[in-house]
Amino acid sequence: MTPLDWSVLAIYLVGIVAFGIWSGRGSTKIDDFFLAGREMRWWAVGLSVMATQISAITFVGTTGQAYTDGMRFLVFYFGLPFAMVILCVTLVPFFYRAGVFTAYQYLEQRFDARTRTLTSLLFQLQRGMAVGVTLYAPSLVLSVILGWSEQATILLMGGSTVAYVMYGGNKSVIWTDVVQMAIIWFGIFLCLGVAVWQLPAEFGFGDALALAQAQGRLDVIDTSTSLTQPYTLWGGLIGGLFLMLSYFGCDQSQVQRYLAGATLGQSRLSLLFNAFLKVPMQFIILLTGVLVFVFYHFDRPPMIWNSVDQARLEEQAPPDRLHDVQQRFTRAHEQREAAAREYARGRAAGASPEAYVAAEREVLAARADAVALLQEVKGDAKRYNDTNYIFPTYIVSKLPKGFAGLVIAVIFAAAMSTLAGEFNSLATATMIDFYKRFVRNDGGDVHEMRVSRLMTVGWGAFACVIALQAGRLGSAIEVVNRFGSYFYGSILGVFALAVLTRRANGAGAFFGLFVGMASVALVANFTAVHFLWYNVVGAVSVFVSGLLISALRRG
Image 1: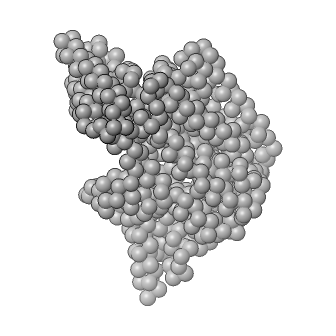
Image 2: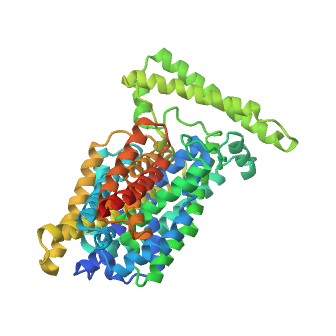
Image 3: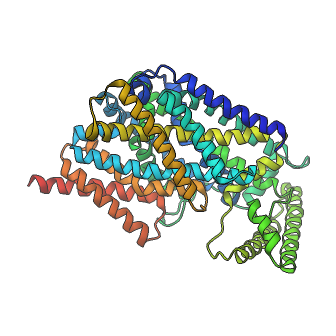
């Protein structure tokens, strides 16, 4: 990174914290602190909903996922537009008219206090752990890319976010999200444009797509009905639908955003806004990762994307074996480049991509040799994965001066926007669902604001502790969604019992939640079913068992 890049990054960090504090001024009651006074417009709420969902994991992990696996991950979002419409008709009106601070307050109105308590506790458990991953994943990558320690990166990112959320609450969260989403959108189009611009002069955009298609990187639709196959059309439409219903309808980090809408119509519009824009955004991010894959056909990529591990390999591997691995990788890259150019020249005449595909297999085999040697040096037999380092490495080493600092700022923006929403929502659930019920309910505005701010700091500190203790991940975007899928379906099942039937009672909802969690645990540990289907298993198990338990209780 050049001095200009560092300047851009520093200006962003100082500016966003200052803006967050400024925009949150005037928050004197917990209604202001947690729900921004319920006066926000739909476009601001919609951008905040999107910003809370598009974490740095999305920006870093998804591009790396596309580099290694192509566009298949897009089906993960196919159920989102349908989920937004369903929520606008069902849960959003219930929450808004109930006048609640948290989604789980509604469960006490519909069922009983224990169902509310258990569901809120599960939310705080899974979201508290997930926010640690949300903080850890980009911090780990950025620490290597920027040359900082992991601890410093985690504390800088977490601490700067806590600073403005603690002061202004949800109002600060929403308005900083608006600014951060503008930066993120600009960064996405910038990366896409630079990836196309950096292709060889004689190599057009159509040629790049042809190479990606020959390697299967543009394949999106897999109509397999297998429950174990990742990212199938049905997994995206059904499993993804249940996941999005759970996340946007039952997760306080999202519910709290649209409860800040000035009217029910404003809240609904904020979700429909996401229904139209989210899938195109993910498409552009994935396509950028695919174009980076093509770019490295003509610019030799690192054997190991993690520069620390690459340096360790070069320092500790036996020189003769390291030389052999490096030579094989260099030859494979040169052969792939030549085969890619040859295929592109003959493509119009119907040339076969067979030689090019074979050259790509040789590159993968050569890299596998390098990874095996690294694991031997490290004495680590676990599956090695450096997917999350691909895109940041490209940013720092290949983008023009100033642009690298801007895109690193985008990664910070994506991380901080998600962290801000999650710190605020966790503090809300703790304050409203536990403190005001079991500790003190008559503290007054000054006391409640003080406690709310302390809880925000507490959850920020907890996230930093989890991030500092976290181990190495695979693709971060998969990790965080897999973790959420253990919980989301069962929580969705409870809300389905609340909204879709009047026959369910508190006993059915409470004990059905345990049945759902147990069902997901069994499927996760004893089958090879893909994690997207965990959401279906949990929701259906809770709904069916809840109705049965309710009937038995009535009998």
